[in-house]
Image (cartoon, rainbow, N blue to C red; front, side):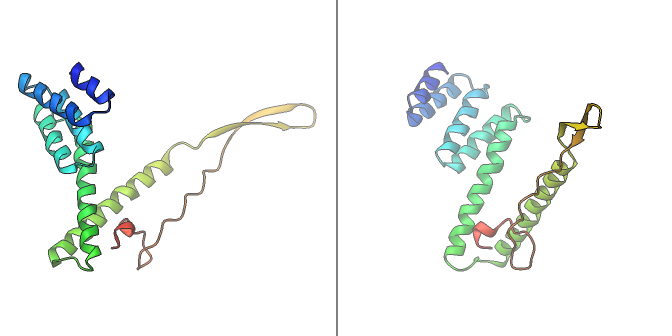
Length: 168
């Protein structure tokens, strides 16, 4: 592992991946080399390879959050790239592809709405202010107004469109 990490530190990612793969052969039950392979492949934009390595991690540790994150984000990037290619050609090739895009849009919007709701429910920041009451200054805790969120870009029907960068 230290040899592979040294190669990462030297900026030789290809040699590092090969060294981590060698570790997987010597210690097949360890998840750590697979985690590093997944991370390095992701950083290189090799999303399919990153997903395969992350799946190896999950076979060894089903609760690994790094592997789950790699699979999720890499999967979204692969989907985004595919949709961009199709849109670049002016069509989504099938009705099922259009339906899958709509289903994904709904899912992402649902997640974004939940995140927004959770962030709005967090405690408002408190600021200490001094006020004069005539004879002496009194300190009080005052809740600051939350910052106004940026308006979402609108889709063609007036709803926020998480696919706006994909041309959907």
